[in-house]
Amino acid sequence: MKGDCALPFQVGAWHRSVQVANPECEVYGLVELMDNNPMVCADQVSVPGPAATLALIALGPLLRAGLVCDTPVIQLSFEGDDEDLNAALASMGAEEEPIVQAAPQEMETVRAAIIHVEVPSTDTPQDYDDLFEEAYGRSFFVHRHTAEEWHAAQVLGQPHALYQLRWSPGDGPTGLLTILVMADIHGKLGAAQVVHAMNVMAGQEESLGIVP
Image 1 (cartoon, rainbow, N blue to C red):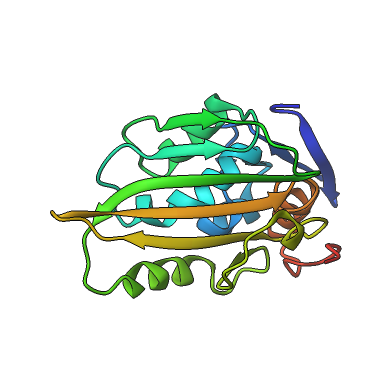
Image 2 (cartoon, rainbow, N blue to C red; image 1 turned 90 degrees about the horizontal axis):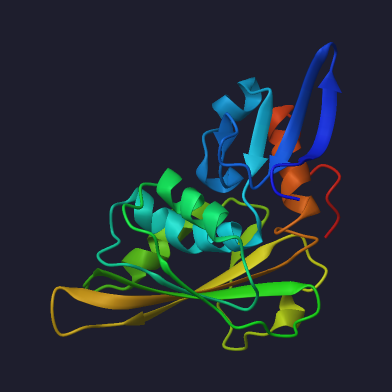
């Protein structure tokens, strides 16, 4: 449940915990987009909930680089926590709340999002691929998907999320970037993300105890 202590742990006499969907926690966000040092020093860290996690994977690198030109539209395959989602994007510098549309779909334990966002036009769309590669290229749990096929079975039962970028040039100073993201609620959207955060807090190997 929101704000619950998902994983308490102890280092000597130091009692610590990982929470879920608690923007008021002293350290809150997507592990891949945060500096490790505050996590190592924190008593409590909160990872975002499922909808916020998908939104951060898609929009975090763009927000951090100041490249979001208009209000993003987020289409979810499930009913998400808007408060958590809005707080997550605000933590990365979003000035406006996104437009969120939910159309529940039967995808077993997989949850997905399609995000449409206006960004500055470029003659080299590879620039956006490079931006996301900089954010996630070394990540164990956020992977770029380059194949044409895109279906839930590719992340079902897996600890990682997949994302894909699709570029549509515009006639003016902006173009449309569409980001597809999906993950399993027991993987990147659930237990795998919680354990990942604990590993970083404890200074352990990031993938320790997380079985693909």
